[in-house]
Length: 218
Image (cartoon, rainbow, N blue to C red):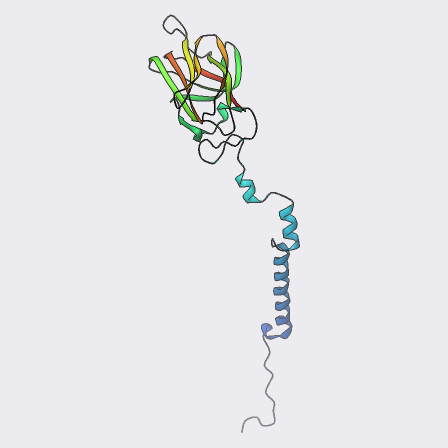
């Protein structure tokens, strides 16, 4: 006969079988849900953070002035003037192969926001820069010149002609004869042209024609 009259020893509960542990787990879960709600965009802390600063998506959409991320010709009208050297590259249909944007010097004077290029391996050279006119702008003004980097000697005469046309062929700026170191100012009404061509002709190898500080104005 097995141990009659003797009680079996009580089985010791494991730690996760205690009621207090289950209750603690429930409390932790509830606390986590409440914290998540407070920090979410719908909770009080989330609303405060969203209203007090710029969201990441808004910050990422900002672009530098003159550098739109849209189609050619859609440069934002953020003010006047808008330098030719700051127009977004997507607005250009055609450019000389070796062109530059930035500071240029002509006859010892610096023009900080210029668009210029170099004639290479040619004589009686002609180069065109064709671009869409930034929305909202009606005029183009600046100075035309050959930069101080241009070669000018008994072989290279240092003479070029600058002109501006609409893409329909209308002459907006009559050819301006420029002989180094002369610089000539210009101010042209674009007559609602949506696209223009900046033409420099009769150039010679190693000359640098410059649309110095050329800028679109309203």
